[in-house]
Length: 279
Length: 333
Image (cartoon, rainbow over all chains, first blue to last red; front, side, top):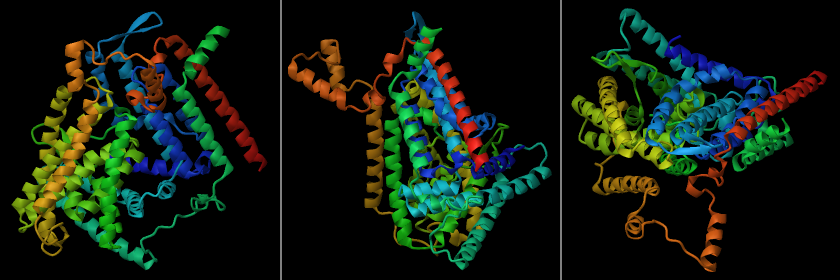
């Protein structure tokens, strides 16, 4: 699977996951968005040597993946963009931070600890973001952004970009395939060919944008999008989620309390001490 | 150049979100003022186009490796700086959410590093002044190369500052800078050449589509006052970021005190000092850019590992019980 095919597959996969009829998917998008942001803030605010405390934060992605039946394997693939840069940043920590930290009577390298926290933070943040997008459709997310008073122009633009991504990825895939079949053993497209190659696609896209606008205008578009109800969810749907529901509020309160608890207190260490005392 | 969430702390993320939100606010106001309903679908389609075009790799001559287009400069040359900036935000948000390329918390940083410089500095300070007296192939190529190099250099510099201000890496500032700037110089050069090639093709085929072309040009050159204002804004932002960075190092006074007294902080005793110190301790929300009590957790590794295992097991058990009852309930329904 090449780069474009992989991108098309990932977009489709996420859309299918988000469209499933599961209770996590039915939670109000704004609630899921707020919980994710709170989690991200809590994770990145951990001290760079606090490996034990940070490990406790795994509860949120772990629970979310289990409750929403998400695959860790699929999510791990998404780390390919983030991990190289995080590794690059972290790999120098053991070299430049040569301090020793006493842990349980033994000295550990502070640089190694900060490298581990950096990588863990990177992974946890990706897991949480994946959990959000795999249980929430882009339409619902846009709806949540509108509730947060993000300007309409920005939200509409984001929604339209998303809707046309699959179309353009398919077009790019076909054009690239046609080029590469005529240029065997060549990695990428020659710079000389870039002008007409991408330029043609660009001009076609601009013409298509005009056609898209005309057809939208014919269907009554006046600068506002109305979110559709989801199939198999006649009563609620994204548009019906304006009403505050008890379950959503409970979900928000439980996760906010757990995240703050694990962030502000050494819960993991307490439980560990307790378990060691018992056994 | 996409930054991950783990590379920043909440203070830096918040600052960069505020800066990017201010730029987005101005852009939304300008786009609204234009009152062109056709613009939103065009922005959406162009955003999707740039996203898809980023999937096409180009050959870097003589190296055997390949790179891809960035798009900020190209979007602003086609849509103008404000619509281009909003479109880039959409592209970055999709990259972050759908492909985990850049973090959700680091989105403010990524918008600033990749969209702000490309769209505002590239379009307003380079493209617009160069095209104000007519457009030709050489000027388009020159503006594209210069714009891409400058905006990528500024973006890479911002990444260095934001990471260092966050204090997550032990890499010295100059070493990090020496690693970031040259590689982005090469990328900027190649990206500028291909952006120039595509825009030259558009200029030959449909010149009216380009920002500042004769048919759709805005009147007048970029005035001295506007230039000065933009540079002042850049200086304020860079100054603010540098002050964040500098805050972790001793300032002039601390340095002098260290030289004279052997310590940067003098011991203060007395009722008044202790009262105010306790107030400060109680009210400081994020001391050292982190929550309180982080350091106290050191020295508890074994309990920590056991605790993590117990928490994981509990979490596993609770989730299964929850799912079991959830399924049972749905069967009854």
